[in-house]
Image (cartoon, rainbow, N blue to C red; front, side):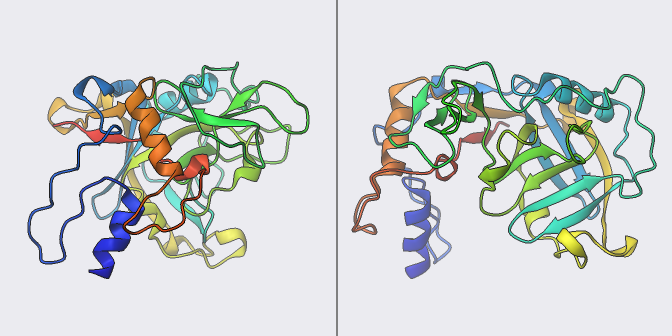
Length: 299
């Protein structure tokens, strides 16, 4: 019973399977429940499918509007099969899992820009659903209409620039010291508490929407900063493909939940104001990383 209550508290109105193994109860219909029109398809060209050894699959939704040159690089790297036979070579506890060429000797394919522009911000996208309170990193947080978390307005420069925040599951581009921006060949996924101090310092290019457990549950690195000391510790990458390049029978399909409607606004309000029976003290607000954007697999 305690496990079921904790799960209910974490997931809000999502149905929880009873501990007895019976079928899950229907999801309660609330003002925050999406309707069919709220679910919209993610283009196949925006889905990156990484297969690790052991037939473990990680699916990443790309964010071309946030980092167009980096995402173009990533599509080229996938189409040329550059990541095949590379590895996950770094797993830093409560931080990131990182993959690419651990030897740093593999040449980039033709057409990849080695040092793209510093795509750390966006030109003021509309915030379709806004959280009630600001946070220490920005004066406004919320979600774009197509379901991406977004922050806008630095406390330091009072600007209006917007950016994707480093929430759990977000995917960023590994780089050397500035002015390096990274090509996109070395990527990482956030597997711990959101390292928001990285916002606007590294290009974010997407978010893991399925299979994050295959990265977050890997053994932690034995070397400095979570890098593996030996080749044998690394997790081999068998392939990385765009869904649009996969055979139709193997191609995954996903929908994102649109945020430009009153039902998503109600969902945000529910996340900011958790209610009984489990919660006795509502917070009256929420970190943008604690209001996870919703996606679903489509058969």
